[in-house]
Length: 315
Picture (spheres, rainbow, N blue to C red):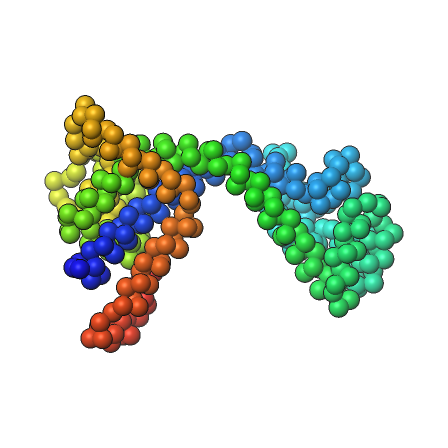
């Protein structure tokens, strides 16, 4: 039980979780880019909005909703917005329900407008049911409509996640193979090389150090073996990122013709692909738990040092 955090096993776990987190962030970024190209998020949001407004694109209230200035301001290049805030949706619906009440409105104005100015249908019925549970205050009614919208958007997010699961696996596979992120090899290197292990753990503890775009590109190129290491030591900002090159990349991949090594490598890749597909939030939480685990098990002589620190280690 040795190492920077008092436990080799804990340090290896932190190092692996940190690498999974970085790869998962890269995977999430790629997924967002793909979603932007195919405009899938906007399409699913439109589907969810249509269900809230009545489920029919020919419904007059749908045209009025998208013609409202608050919504039109979100539309660019004639494409459906990928995000509509709950506050914006609620204010738009309240304005559509009270077209003859410019300016401030009361709860009674809103209730009367929903009954008289909105066409009969699921939207009218839903809005009346939503505002009935309030204290007949317009602020509470707006919050109730926002909550109704958010509940439905949770379902839309579920559609989006299910639709992107395949892309997530594909992107995770490409990233894993491109970086040779072999979990078994990473764990072995972290276990056998304390220096590499401590540097990665330190990077996990201090991820917010300023790094420029050129620094990231240079460090990534070295990690993947696309650029030779410099003769002089790298700057402090690049040091932790370049350390990943000692456990990732194809530079030290060994004999690629050895079938037995390929079998082991494929198993390591599969483990990484499954881990990365869990997503960055999952590994962010796991990494924080590992960091807090050490804080909960410090020796009595070290408690004073932690209490005197300005801020605890954070990711």
